[in-house]
Length: 267
Image 1 (cartoon, rainbow, N blue to C red):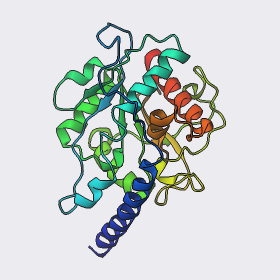
Image 2 (image 1 turned 45 degrees about the horizontal axis):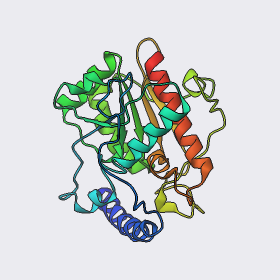
Image 3 (image 1 turned 180 degrees about the vertical axis):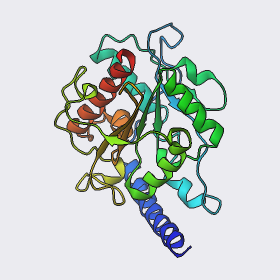
């Protein structure tokens, strides 16, 4: 209990700091011209749809402080739509310009072989939903995680993941793995910070000092859960076209997403 209380107090303090920083950052990173209406072409039939996972959030003591930090809607929908613009411009993938939202309650997730989940250090999957996520990957689906940081959020993430993948191990992805080379060569990678770190003198959050590219694999060795830990690619997707956002972070984030998508579609 003492350890849990200390952790909650730390989270509370960090959440307050994050909120204060975010208020200042919002005054710089604004997009007054952003139109939330469905983009042109959203009704067309295409070969790829970018699906985002909606999940139940973990709550500690009601979850009011922890929920301030983030959830499944973080960067939504601008990050998704801006990324889709990049996919359509940089590849020959026929990507629909409109994102989709899926959950683990209905069976709709089975219609989207690639699913993105943000702030996975805040999810709390009931047993039935964790098992459905496993069924999704067993059927050939691919889950990409992003934007969660440090040991505390890692423990929250793995607690739910293990309900469906308890028989699987999580391992670091080797530099030579095809997922880093299907289109872009990503042998040299670095930590992509979130806007909370702007102007990026520091790139990590909490104790997530080192970026980690990890994976869960199936029986054939195919990556079915691509885990991007201690990095915030979603902010790079969202703000790639902003003049104050560094190109190097946007480039790596977009290349990572595109490689993961192509891998999911071809392996």
